[in-house]
Amino acid sequence: MKLKRNISQFVGFTILRLAAVFVILVLVFIIYDIASKGAKVISWEFITQKPTKGMTAGGIWPAIVGTFWVSLVTIIFAVPTGMFTAIYLNEYATQGKIIRIIRLAIRNLSGVPSIVYGLFGFALFVLMMNLGLSVLSAGLTLGLLTLPWTITASEEALKTVPMSYREGALALGATKWQTIRTNVLPYAIPGMLTGTILGLARAAGETAPILFTGAAFFWPALPSFPKVLVSQFMALPYHLFIMSTQHHEIAKVRPIAYGTALVLIVLVLAMNILAVVIRYRFRKKYKRA
Amino acid sequence: MMAERISQKTMPILNEPKAEPQTKVASKVLWRRFKEQAIHYFFFMNGLIAVIILVGIFSLLFTQGFPALKAVGLGDFFLSDHWDPTSPEKESYGILAMVVSTLMVTFGALVIAVPVGIACAAYLADVASPRVREIVKPVIEILAGIPSVVVGFLGIVVTGPFIAKVFGTANGLNAVNGSILLAVMALPTIISISEDAIVAVPQEFKSASLALGANKWQTLTRVTLPAAMSGIIAAVMLGMGRAIGETMTVLMACGNAPALPHSFLDPVRTMTATIAIELGETVQGSLHYQSLFVIGFVLFLMTFLVNLVSDLVLHKYQRVAR
Image (cartoon, rainbow over all chains, first blue to last red; front, top):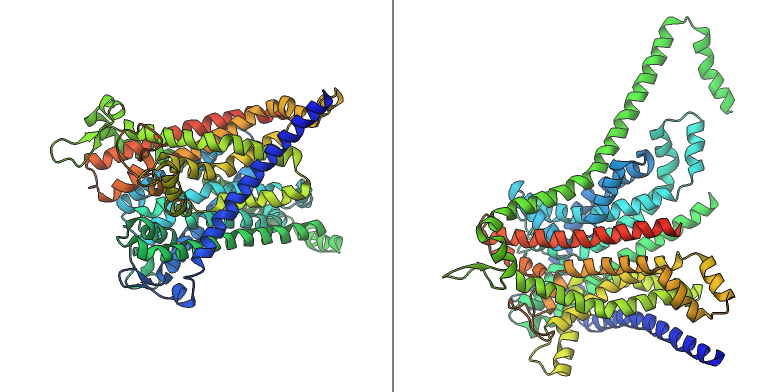
């Protein structure tokens, strides 16, 4: 009886372990496949040059530049808005109906499909606000998409600041805003940054929202600031999409697709690692304080 | 030091003639209060932005799509599987085939991701040592961070050809392929939320079970998992929401045939893929354009409902756990 039970426990735990191993293997496989095949085309030229010969040769520099500009617009819109919302929710708001509605809205926004953000951004920014197919339209669309993540992450960061920090400031006669500015934000900002970077890493990899808000097949001349904001652009994820589905010489551009995928993954992972590093240093500093 | 500074500041006020400084102080206090109020309202306005965006998405999709719903008719829209908006003779706008396709790949994805995800979550929460957990959890976070376009790309170059070989089909771009890839993308959501739910089961439950002589496996399967069930269900629903709304992966890896699929080996075209393929080619304000917004609206409602229900379940469950 006992033996039978122990056998079933052993088998059960083994199955659970295998499931975890399976999940890890999936990730390892994805990274290995992209890295091993993508590394063959990565070179200084691949990163710093334009595509040439009908996109079958050359590099991906314009796509990197485009991703950078779009991400910048996304940051400028989403980061302050997200932080301010989080400050309201965590520092000012008192429990009540309005708060519940706001929280419900945030949670549901994070579940809205990215293609629906694309539709919304197209109708709102491109057509109604007349921003056209542009870096601005795409960046703002991605900003809306990132907003729920930056809010949630910022709020988590604010929550970790002990209540006593606020009470101390308030007891000395500081106003609410003074308290937040001097005693809450300095401790919360690294955590806010962490979450924000994670959100941006996701936004940088999104394709559906930029499909019809400004992503272009090819960027003949890279415009300078501020003209770049109103021009169409190339972006890494869109370039990968084009290279793997829309190009007529699929076999010829496959290495370029692998190279693009590798650069995209490295970019996303680097942002993730950066976020982890900030979080780690923040925690250490926090313990000392 | 502090006391010194305060006394220096307050002393002159006490010594000076009364009238002027007091009004000064009063106006200063008023100004300060006003400023505080203004700051409060500023943050409140930011708080409302999320609500405004959500309502904005809802109303924009609805107003843009409504004329098409009226022109085509609810019945023709939802019950016909014939989608051919660019036909030269008679355009048709039935979205049934793509709704079925969406549900099909989502179902396929859940069949794979739910058992694996829950097993992995149970392992992390109940079996793994803290050190293993420290390693596996970031790995799952990384998996969540892989862009969907990369997953779709792998569907074209890796899993597609593999499926074609195994099942002997012309190419592997079909519902099976989409299901596998969506499963990979839904796994992180399912794992991390289920794990939270399992960890949140009170220790007393497990201790009581162990004290009665049950071993760890029996405790896990008969006490811990049932106790965490509502949280696990919410996790599965959130994963489902992600799978329904996923675009690039299904667009790239499912073959995009706009017909009603009969088996998992048929190429399918989901609602998200249809929008992605066709929006760029439509004329603004045309029936075709509007009908794509109806698809977006239906998609929005589907994910909204799924999220709302999982949210309610999670909320209720959190209260119980506390």
